[in-house]
Length: 492
Ligand SMILES: [Cu+2]
Image (cartoon, rainbow, N blue to C red; front, side, top):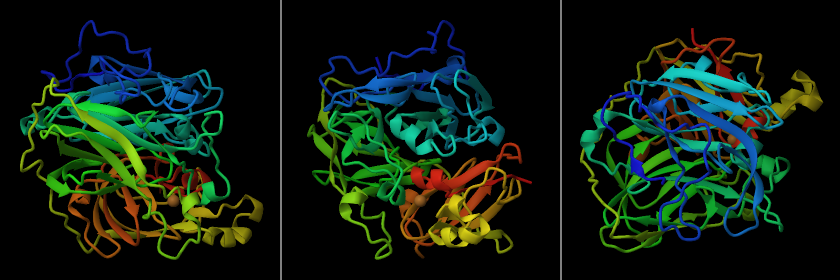
């Protein structure tokens, strides 16, 4: 069964007798599952002992096609939902059964760079990588995914991603829906391209490089067009955009409103009422939807109109993957328990305060400018048109040295198109997007932002990074990242 409460008594209690988590039977669907029921990734509790994952090739049925070669974390595609608890220690062991290196980044975790996976922490074929850290951050929806330099796009596309939940027992007083798999559902959104044989198609050249790899088929939790059965009450959706490049413009087909309650770094100050919402690659958003009417509904995406900055990139809608369409359907099952409520206030969040003496940096997310410079500076043929401030990623170069415990202002300047910008090991507050203050649902702690124009961030550096173990910052269009739109920092 995939269902179970994620709010258990006792902090960091080792659950004696818990089953070994070294092998997973892939996805576990709910009882009475029909064809293409929304798969609920199995929940694995880090307080029950070490989390053990195996990265391996597999064959996976997406639903409408013949099965395709894929990769997964102890699963045929994607991986279990990892549960962490604020204030508790966690041990993770990842064994690589692929015939190529991988690495595993904990996206949205505030842990030291030495404990996080990055291009500097390759897991060679046949070997195991072990990491331990203490969870010290508020409740949040995070995720983990492959991050080997140059192959991140292909490995994530093949299936190497999974959700993670940081829970905080202090947040129980909210009374929000919290029964995983029943009224607290993970939704991992992706787009994929399939060939005539039903095999995943991955490209990282031509338009798929310029715009990132996109596909016309929408996949939710690893299947096409699933149905989620939900109780007749409030339901919490933990939405992750795990697409390589596509932004999802989400809305319900009956226009019903919903409440955004959390962003990348956890709860907002208060729920933000919305009828539509853009989620960029790497971003998470938690929303609460009311099904008490008993009426089912579809969650749809509009076309990805946010990708191109107006007039900057002459490229066709087909290549952009601009299609709109349904992602999944919800059907109300009155037999399921609905117990959650939506509080008026969610969290105390400090007011953003920009001190004039803060260090300011400008980061130009470049497509093309460095190619011109590169012909003289980087030896022509090896230069990449993708870079930050004119320089493609170099694992031997530290780009910035922020002070540990300090804050900085980062001005993100996206070139040619919108880029989802992500910082490892830090949270930021958005000061401005395109000259405007952030909308309410983006006014919390973030680690990824869709820079649709000049974007000003107040970044807080609270985790240590060294020359040997630096943190990355990069575009989360994974083909851009692989091609060099990435830099690294160490703290001083
Ligand atoms: Cu980009």
